[in-house]
Image (cartoon, rainbow, N blue to C red):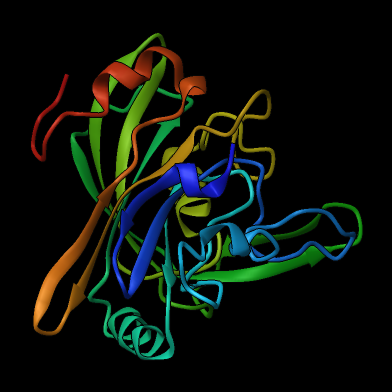
Length: 224
């Protein structure tokens, strides 16, 4: 499918696409396709290709913002730096959560090893990392959770889910329970713009979320 067919929002400043799982944002060192390499599919009448303003992990799907010109890039960068951009993610956790929600405040640092590669781990000396979460639904030993990160650290939601809930995200080969697609999806993105309406984009859950897809339309505060 062309990336143009995955556009959720477009105007003269911005494009938000529903990034498919499996497509990295940046070109892999080993070669292969990437969002940056395919950005020409998103010119949509402009001479220049749009530029991604943030990153999603390769196996994470959902809302991703691209800027269409230099002024927009500056505006969006300022919004990210001021923590004005609101992001929501949906994920399936491999355990039943009894609590309705909460806040995970756990500093993270990068840990590397020759055998396991690198990952983010809880470390009091690491970077501040804060994630709000709420339970959406529980079924068959699993929980659908909405995460709204306050900070934007690498692998923040994945590492926080493992640290806070013990089991992590279904399909997460590093922090969670391996097997099948990783059930983590960037479901909504809201970007403020001075003097203009907010960019507000929502991406539906992919088909591989199965029956959980019937629950992704619940509003804030709702629970199945």
